[in-house]
Length: 321
Image 1 (cartoon, helix red, strand yellow):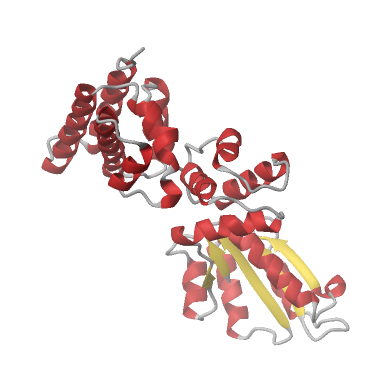
Image 2 (image 1 turned 60 degrees about the horizontal axis):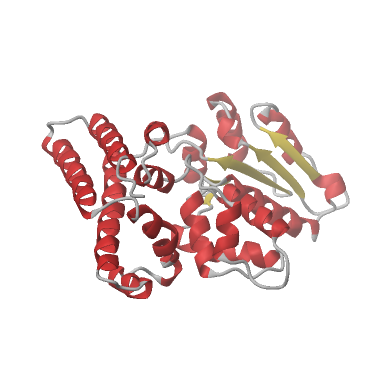
C-alpha cells in the first residue's frame, strides 16, 4: 500500500510503478485498475488471483483505497494472508485516517509505504518541475511559489505549468514573472491572511481567517505569524527612516537569500501605509490577544478574530498619502 497526504505523489508513484512493470509485463493483458467506493474489492482480489497471460506477473491497482469499508478490509485481510505470488496488488490511498482498519492492517503486515515531501524538499522539487519543462528558475521565484501555495503540490505543479506556458525566451524564470501570474492560495497558506491584514482589507481578512480556522489552523499560530510580520514591518520602517538601504535591512533581518525579495515586494509597500505609532499599537494588540489566550481570560478563536478585526481597521486607517 502506498499513501500520502499529497495526491500528486501517489499519482506519480503509480506512474513509476506502471513504467517499471511495463518493462517486465505485457500490460495490455495483465493490468487492471479499480476504484474503491465504485468497484467491489472482491473484483480486485479476483483479478489479483488470476494467472497472468503470456507474462510472469499481473499488475492490479486499487485507487482511492482510503474509501474501502471495514467489511471490504476484512475481505482484503484474507487475501493479504496468502497473496498470489504471480501478482502485484497495489493499494493507493490519499490521506487515510490514522486509525483506519486499512492502515492498521497494512502496517501490521509491513506492506505500507508513506510518500512524503518535507517542506525543506519542496524547493528542489519545484526546481525539478521547471527543469522537466526545459526551464531554469531563480531561488526567489521558488521561494515565492512555496510561500504563496504552501505545501499543495498540485497547486504548485499547476502554477509551474502556467508560468512555463507564458514564459518567453531562453532566460530563466524570474520572481516578477511568477508574482504576476500566480495568486497566493488562501486555502493552503496563512500568508495571504497576513498580507490582507497588513493592507487593511478587513472583510477578506475575516473570511480568510475563518476559512483557516475551519481547516484546523491553530489561533496561536496565526497570532504568531501576524506578530512576526508586524515586528518585521516596524524594524523595516525604523531602518528606512534612518536611511538604510534594502541590502542592509535584509542583513539585519537575517533573511535567507531566497526570501530577500520580501523586503521590496511586501515590507516596503506595507510599511509605507503606516507610521511607527500604528505599528507599535498593532504589536500591542497582538500581545494582549496572546496573553488573553495563554492566561485563559479569552477564548482563542474569539481572541484571534478580535485581533484580526482590530488590526485590519488600524491598517486601513493608517494609509498615508
